[in-house]
Amino acid sequence: YDEFTKIRDEIARNIERLQLSANVIANIDVLASLAIVAENNNYVCPNVNDGTIIDIKEGRHPVIEKMIGEGCFVENDTYLDCNDTRIAIITGPNMAGKSTYMRQVALITLMAQIGSFVPASYAKIGVVDKIFTRVGASDDLSMGQSTFMVEMMEVANILKESTNNSLVILDEIGRGTSTYDGLSIAWAVAEYISSKEKCGAKTLFATHYHELTELENKLEGVKNYSIAVKEKGEDIIFLRKIVKGGTDESYGIHVAKLAGVPQDVVKSANEI
Image (tube, rainbow, N blue to C red; front, side):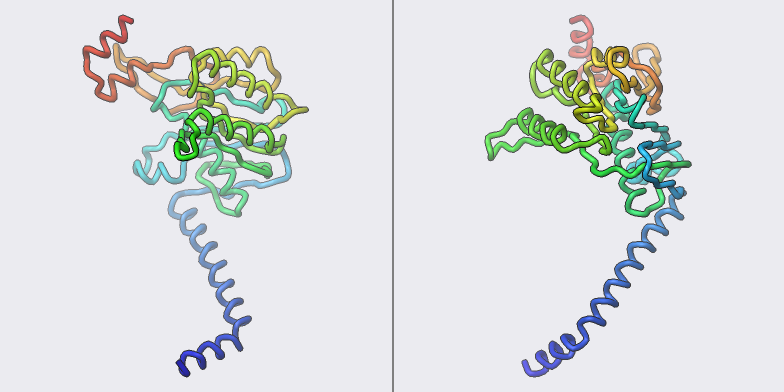
């Protein structure tokens, strides 16, 4: 114990020097890690500024591109601003890559703001004050809250807290209730966010409610995008590419077939 207290006293006498050294090493560790990742994975130095534009060319998802192997990830461009392209309504089938695309935009924006290079060929990122996401489903059954309740609480928080300087990622909100209720909520949320007076946040909004594509003609700042799909006979091929314009096809039955749902069920679903 005497030896232990000697060591402790010696450390106490040198605490400032030790903490300074630890801090310097921690900073070198972070910067070296970001540099190695940027070098190994062909990242680019972003132009970070005080503007309101997010302009990404050939953006990639930093995690998924590593999982699927080099050269396999399909890059996508993104352009958002506070005027004509505030909200991007993204339609397209499940499994086509909507969620991956939206998450990569949020990750690239975050990485640029912490001083990292980013997975893209070019990136001009206006600093955002907050990044909000409403992605996936998480029940809090122990608290007696359903998936839909949790979803609505998260949406409520986003609408209260986001500003015209925020980035908002919304993935299929309204799907936890009946079609008409869900569509009505999704439509109203899009209207609220698009209003510069109420919110005006830069938003990526993925949806299966194809009716929302009508908003492009009704609201200022709303643009339609979709994930390109190639039909080959009865099969579909996901091209993973974001293109301008909406779609009115969900390809839900095709996805069910791809997932291995029995042929009898697929055939019956088509007839129904």
